[in-house]
Amino acid sequence: MRKISLISFMMLIVSTSTFAGGLLTNTNQHAAFLRMLSRGATTEIDGALSNPAGLAFLPNDGFHMSLSIQSAFQTRNIDASCEGLGLNKYYEGKASAPVIPSLFAAYKMGDWTLSGFFGITGGGGKASFDDGLPMFDAMVIGGLGAQKIPSNAYSLKSYMDGKQYIYSVQLGLTYKVTDWLSAFAGGRMNYFTGGYQGALKASAAVDLPSPAGGTIPVGTELIGIDLDCDQTGWGFTPVIGLDAKLGKLNIGAKYEFKANLNIENSTKENSLRMIGAAESELEDYKHGVNTPNDIPSMLSVAAAYEFLPVLRASVEYHFFDDKSAGMAGGKQKHLTKGTNEYLAGIEWDVIKRLTVSFGGQITDYGLSNDYQSDTSFSCDSYTLGFGAKLKLSEKANLNVGYMWTTYEDYTKTSQNYNGTGLSGTNVYSRTNKVFGLSIDYSF
Image (tube, rainbow, N blue to C red; front, side, top):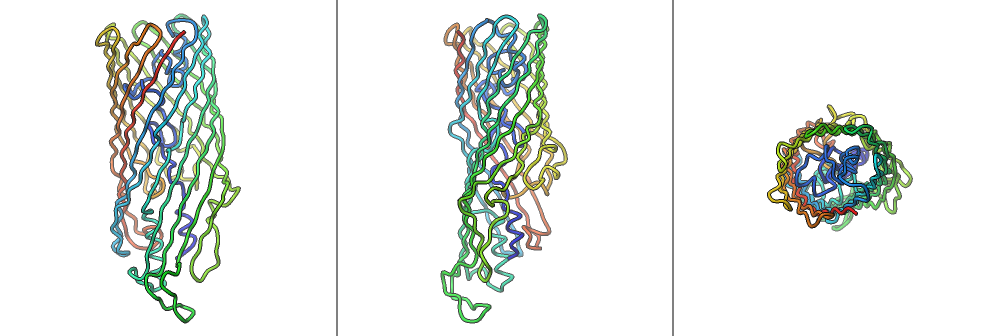
């Protein structure tokens, strides 16, 4: 087996987001988003993230706060086939983030509003492939085959766990320029924490002849990998916004600049072993190595309209400039374009204290075969969400929402399947479900 082939495929396992948003950005932070999806023109407290300029139009001066808790569960599956290797296997990966907290706060006094936000704005939570990945099997099968070791003469065990979280704190100031126009300026500090644990072991299932003469006893390790690596980093995102309130029409716009973020390895274990060769390390996970993991710039433009005092609707557009954000191995160069998202939502006050809502989102990535890999793949999708807002009192609201995403399978056919020189195909598929509760309070 060629060492360089295996190293080049040991990339990032959870670099794609578990939540809504671009390849590296989470936009769902509040249950109001889950129940309606289009919140870029809101003038409620969740606007501290989605439309901070709109906070100038909060109904009352004073403190406004919200606490949101979400749970997200996702699957990432790969249907792999390579006739030349005798590989035909379905790999199931699970990613979960059972507790996703977010905190929103604003203090409004006259024309000025100071706002803040804390949440997990990027990363894919935790992902586990308990039965390994196609690239592991392909590399081992192909490598040992090249050494004239038949596939039924060895056993293979592998697994890979990964986690990524980007914790963010945002602060900013909104000013009401006129009765109908407001502006926002602020910034968000982002802290990345993640890590990878994995192992692969191919062992002789029978006694094998040794190339050096003699016999390789049953149970002898032929190929082995052990990895335990933590990663950390930080970056800063400047944010600006505008909001125009024109009678029943409200228009919100926000621009988040790119955050340059590098993550550094803190490696506890990193070994690559092959029978007949000296032990070495996986280059990407050596202790102290830095890897780019930029947060892309993002543009949001939204319009909300009040058709009736009890009926409101909103439409929205997002653009994530993923192609200009540095990624591990320069993967962004293989994207054909940035990410485009189209969102819409509607809400209806059934009674004075109860509002029900529904929304949808279409996400279009600029994917290509060279961008997709076993350890980091995305799929175009559409998302639906619904839920309700219950007015508990004049000062408190409860939001509840549920969102699920339907992904379009991505089929990648290669004439050099995982560096083996053989033709093979991977079909990548995903599922995603998110539930959330939020409490809003003003005082």
